[in-house]
Length: 438
Image (cartoon, rainbow, N blue to C red; front, side, top):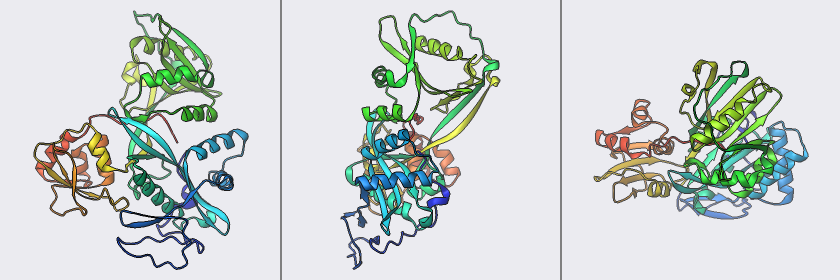
C-alpha cells in the first residue's frame, strides 16, 4: 500500500497541535514542562521523550479504515475491509486524535527479511494518511517518528516502505533501495524459442489460494537473500485475501514441486508477479507455459524484482519494452546490528566514519570500522573522521545500491583516499531485490 498522498498530509514538519494531547520533544536530560500534556505513556529513547501513539481498539480500527478509504479514494467492499483488518490486526498501528476523531494514522507491519544470508527483523510502514482538514500540520511526521523510535526500542534492524514522494521519506532516514524492471511484450510478436532440452516434469495450473502449501514450500526452498521477505503464514494468507492470483507449479519427475510462476489475469494483460525457476527444467517449462497464453491476452508483462536486464534472452530483444521502476525505500534502524551481522569486508587498519542520523541518535556519531568489529566511539559525528555520510548514504552503500565513486561524485559522501579504498571493498556485492509490496 502506498504510504500517503501528497494532498493529504505532506507539509512542514511542525507537530500537529492537538490541545488535549500536545506532542513535545525534549533535549537530552531536559525535564518536560508541558502541564497540559495528557500522556498515555512515555519512554526516553536516545534522549527524546516520545508519546505513545499506538492504537488497537476496535473503534480505532474502524476509524482508521474510514480514514484510509477517504484519503486514498477507495471504495468500501467486504474484501477490502477484510484485507485491511488483516493488516491492522498484525501491525502495530499508530494514530492521532483531535476533537474525538482519528485524524492521522499509519501501520507498522512486523516482518523478517533475509539479506546476504542473515535474517533481520524489519518493519513495513504503510497506509500513512491524514484527514484533509489536518494536512500540513505534521501529523504523519509525528507518527513516523514514534514508529521509528519504537522499532529501535524493540530491536528491529530495518524498515521498508513504498513512498508517495521519495523526498518526504528521506526526511525520516529512508532511501531508495529497491527497483524493478517491468518487461512488456505484445503477444502479436511472441518469440519462438528453439531448444534441444525438454523438461521431464509437468505444470499444474490453479488458483494460488488453493495451492498455498505447495507455493510456500517452493518459496522457502528458494528463499530470496537479497532483502526479500521470509514470508510468515499470515502474510501468505493476506496475499490471497487481497489478490485474485493464479499459479503454475512445476513438478519434477520425482513428484516434488520445484518451481512456480504466480500471475494475474485481466481483460487484456497477463502480469507475472513472481517467477521461481532454480534450474533449466523449471525455467524452460514455466516460460513455455506463459507463452502459451498468447492467444488469450494482448500483452504479457513481467514485474521482475531484479534490475539485471534479461532482454538478451529473447531472440530479438527489441520486441519487449523494459522500464526500470523505482519500487521501495529502506532504512537502517539499528546500524550496530546491521554492521555486526552482514558479511562485510572489514579492514585490518581501522577507519572512522561519521554518521548523521538525528532521528535515531543511537546510530548517529563516529564509528570505528575494522576487522575487530564496528564500534561507535563518539556520540557526535567528528569533523576529522575519515569519511562522513548520512544514514541514507550508509544504507545505499551497505545495500550495494550505489558505488563509492558515484556517492563521492554526487557529494553524498566525503572521504579520504584511505577511507575510499576501504569503502570500495565494504559492501556485500548483492543487488537488493524485493517482490512483496505493503
